[in-house]
Image (cartoon, rainbow, N blue to C red; front, top):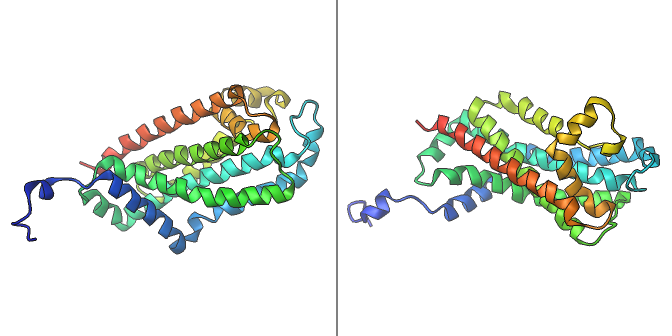
Length: 268
């Protein structure tokens, strides 16, 4: 069929987002074979944390009131969330690369809904995070990490991991649109470290003192860490989960709004 024979709706219409987003997800997954550096940090760094913290901080379980006798039950979920954050940051890094090479201009010219260009790469990072989460979980289990509560602990851990990937995916996407350069990479990574390690990353809130206690108490990431750890520390209860779920929902929404606002700078 020639252009002259095409119906007006076929010429002026936009592609369905349910076709655009799967294509962007597939592109995100295929990119792993061409750029392994987007996947390796989300696996290697968490495994390094498990090995380092499991050995150097093993005596932390002797603290009065520490919630577990197995140190990896405390640190394995932290390592998984750290890896999920790096997987989310890969969205921003890949986007800055596309902007610098001019490929993103081609995406902007595509007849597709604008929001699909934001959601597609983030969903791709979420899909990519699942294998890395499984690998790190296996390593943690070999090191001695065990679910204390019921099997819902795996679900809460996955929810926390997926939520952190989406949150940092949108946030770094906004930074990519704002700076349009890979020079923003350190800012993306620092944001992940600061938000996680200024929470209950290494010790429970009750064991903290001074300014760190005050910051961790109001840091929403403390609730996310509680959500990730709940199955490794005891029975899964709504009391331990709702704060983390709310923090991820609100944080992801705010990050998505930030990315959408910055996206407008690319579209006159």
